[in-house]
Length: 274
Image (cartoon, rainbow, N blue to C red):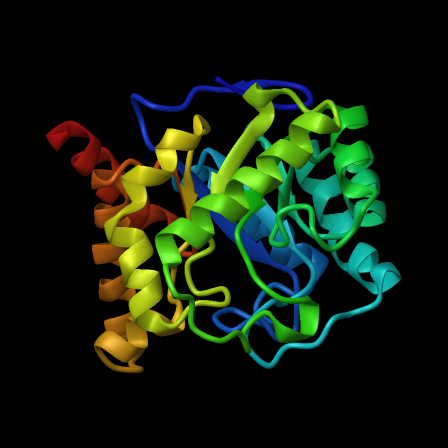
């Protein structure tokens, strides 16, 4: 059971699907598509109807080449959407942010999970905010600072380095009073990793379960898929489908996706096979 601020989410027997809702003008896949409160709210409700277990709302793109936005602007983008959806959907809402100030306001608005791409590295106040609000936490592996996330050199041993960094993030969370039951780890496919390193992490995903926490995987439409196949939307979507099945077969408890309807079917069938 994943312990959130106001609910519990069962993990294990059934793979959970986290639907992505980017309220940004520049996200790599759907930037600008939901940069409007009415459209974002409608899409959030649709994500629930399509079978998602969580809605993950983000107000700053972290794609390669993206730039950080001020915290006030990030709040302006995400808070109205969270407030709108918190009163109209039954599934928990996650806020995709590395800023403690945004996380606190988002939780006050109705979010129950903080999805931090820095694994608690970027904002020293984040562990305290998550602990005080009793929110769920997704701690993602990444390297470098905000402006150099996608400019990292190759790793000597990707599996060992990701394992050690995730363990450090979890330890920091526990030291801040965040209960183990609230923590989920994400190996950060595509963040500070070459395409073959991302593939290696996906292939050996099961080893990260040794850390003792549920695993979330986000591969949806990422550039490493394009480097294996082609840059067409169809290739990215089918490539994503392959990575979702691989992730579940290798132990993922949660998959973070754009195409919720497709992913729900993939997860249900793969779960049944397993």
